[in-house]
Structure formats: structure tokens, C-alpha cells
Length: 205
Ligand code: TZP
Ligand code: MG
Picture 1: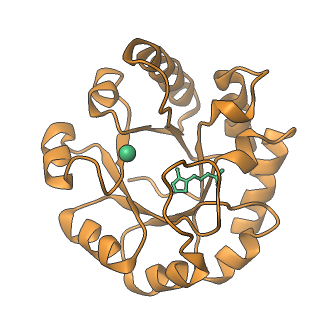
Picture 2: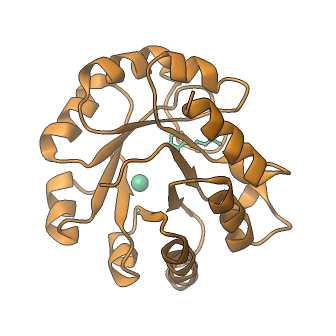
């Protein structure tokens, strides 16, 4: 997959007065490399519409588009890939369905990361690094020590996620992360573009 630094995930609850496409377009102008559609509440039809709109937007700007959970929707809109958790379908089954599309896997400890790498994941999520309210069923924060372990042991790209803010991202970078993912800090910002640019400035050192 094309390498990346900044990965944004949708979170419409953080911008009740603005449309998702408007917010994500601002994130793209701010420099995000990947957008993931993550929506645990919409029905299939609504989700499909959102995925179609995001596919059109990301294609226009040459940004990678990933769909969380829904392999069928990813295939239907020709997303670049899917993102799955530990509880979702096994990677081997997902690979059979999506062929050479990108597959990302959430991991919370090194064993899971090594397993995902062996199973052929294209990238992994490493987190939640810090406490977060964005994910309901989230496991306990793994802290920057797991980021450090991933940096030392994992060869495929890994992206740090969970409670990452402009105010704490330096610690995550110091632990060895070169790719960062955020939801609330980006889409809940009153200056989405500026927040993305500020993350990137830190990631570029
Ligand atoms: N996976 C692990 S933590 C998380 C996900 C989807 C939520 C991250 O959200 P935020 O707002 O950046 O803490
Ligand atoms: Mg999932």
C-alpha cells in the first residue's frame, strides 16, 4: 500500500452541525493520507450512500479510502480497503473476499500484531494508546509502551490510535510511531484543516 502519515476516521457525533463530506474535505486539504468510514449506527442503505460520497471525494483528491467492518460495502463502492477488529471475520476469510485490497487490523498487544503480520495484514492499528470515549467497547489503554514494542518488532506499517491529541502526540512519536490516527481531535476541531496540518508538521519532524 501507499505509505501514509496521517489517518482520519469519521465521527459524525463530533460535528453535529456540519456534514461529514465538508469536514472530511477539510481534513484532506489539511493533508490526511487516509480516510476511514467508521459508522456503527447507520443502516445499510445510509452507510452505502456515505461510502459512495466518500469514495467520490477521496478519489477526486487521490486519498486512500478504507471502510470499517463492512466488506460488502467496501466492494460495492470500490474502496481501497477494509479495517477489521479482533472480533470481526478472520483475516484469511477477508483476504479471500477482497483480493488485493488493503486490509487493516486493530491490535491491542504484540501477539495480535505479530499474528496479523503473519496472516498478511497490510497495516495494523496499535491502540488505544490513551483513554478515549470515541469507541464504546474499547479495551484498556495500552500506553506508549505498546507503541514502542510495535516499533521494535513489527515490519508492516503500524498506525497509533486512541486518545491522540496535538497535546500528546509528541510522546507517541517519541515512542516510535511515524503514523497517527485520530477521530475526535480531527473531526471535532473548530479548525480541521489546521489541526491536520499541525499533526503533519509534528510527524514530519
Ligand atoms: N480504535 C481504537 S481507539 C479508537 C478506535 C476506532 C477511537 C479513537 O478515537 P479518538 O477520538 O481519536 O480517541
Ligand atoms: Mg470491527
